[in-house]
Length: 107
Image 1 (cartoon, rainbow, N blue to C red):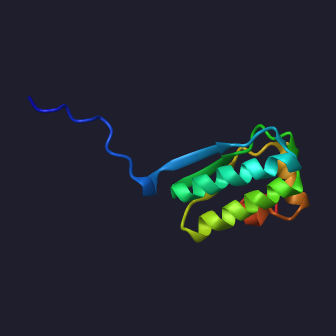
Image 2 (image 1 turned 180 degrees about the vertical axis):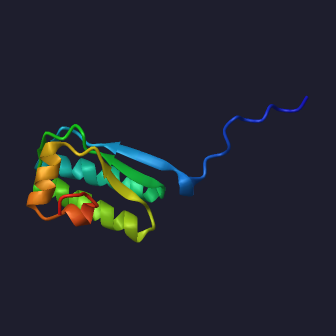
């Protein structure tokens, strides 16, 4: 008896997609956890989508971590995009002049 082929092909690490949903409070205390999460996802080497829809507070340290993650991802040929940023996230990114660095409109 032959095994039944899987309906899904084996995962291709280079084509994998990761989505990171940001927490509501991106205050200074969240920067270390965000850094760790981004580091792991960049190492995974697949496209990285950041869901910013829940962000209600966005501090400079976390935005710096996001920019560093975007730079590291792009330097390694990884697609990095921020999707559905909340109004708060958009305003914080715009106020700090980070729209271009994060690939967001408004800069």
